[in-house]
Amino acid sequence: MDDTAFGTRNKRGDWKPDRLIEYPPVLVWPPRPIGFVKWLIGYPGYILPWNLVYAILAVAIWRYATPSLETMRSFAPGWVAFLLLRNLVLILVFFGGMHLWLYTWKRQGTQFKYNGRWQDGNGGAFLFRDQTKDNMIWSLGSGLPIWTAYEAVTLWAYANGYIPHLDWEQHPVYFIALLLFIPLFREVHFYLVHRLIHWPPLYRAVHRLHHLNVNPGPWSGLAMHPVEHVLYFSGILLHWVVPSHPVHALFHLLHAGLSPAPVHTGFDRIKLGSEHSFDTEGYAHYLHHKYFECNYADGALPIDKWFGTFHDGSEASQEAMNRRFMARARKQGA
Image 1: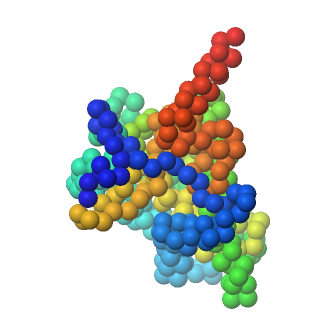
Image 2: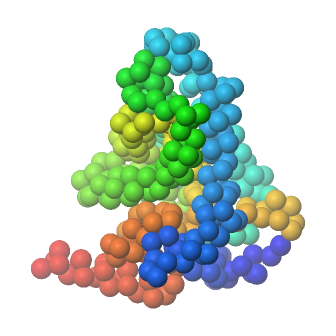
Image 3: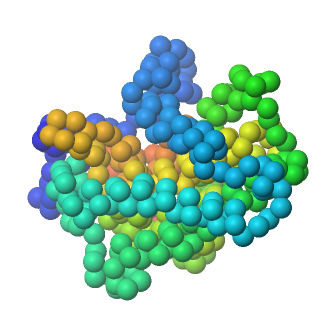
């Protein structure tokens, strides 16, 4: 499989897909019901592949890798440590697996890699002057415990009846509907948090750490300042007020905790053998890392288009973004 069948590479070695980024037919007029159904259940689409992967993981983890609600009625080091260890394994498999395949073993070289250069192994901006070590430290030293803390408190609250608990057997339609709604809620929550931390004072103090990764890799996905981790995972508070099942909370946290890995790989597609590959769906977010002030949201809802910050990868979008930058510079210089 040759990446020239999917895109072009410039003189610097940077690869760009031929396709432009498009929003699915979710909020369009006139409605496109056939297109919507194809997006909802097709491949790739809303359910397949990633949301289904996270949903299956959530169910399996709830059944086989989560202490009983009776155990979690009282905080105890044992079960909290178990959650921490389980989440560590998930991160190592998901983030570490993609890093090994793409960056350590370099199984596909720079095929489908947006930035033709490899990651900075001697960058003065990173801890120990090493981007991968820096990213792992922030992901495991801050992201992992904050993710686990939110999970432990939420499961403890379910166990004690402090938050509304949904019985899926009595409300199967609501159970599925809420499961389908969570990724859309996460898009809105992520956009709001993301715009907040791009406010200059917060950007300099907090979000700049994540944006040091101009040439991101899988471990860059959760490489954030602790304040950003607190805000990023706070979407789980939805389940403190909306009736839900612990599976919904686990799905929500798995979606937040694991989805940054594929979209930060720095690759458009990951090859599995010589003839097969899958789309990481990471191009929109790569453009955000490259240009900083576009594509704040990343998904089905056209939020960036509504607020004039959408970049679809075209020259027209590039020119519109440049005009926006110049207008702001003139305003600041006035």
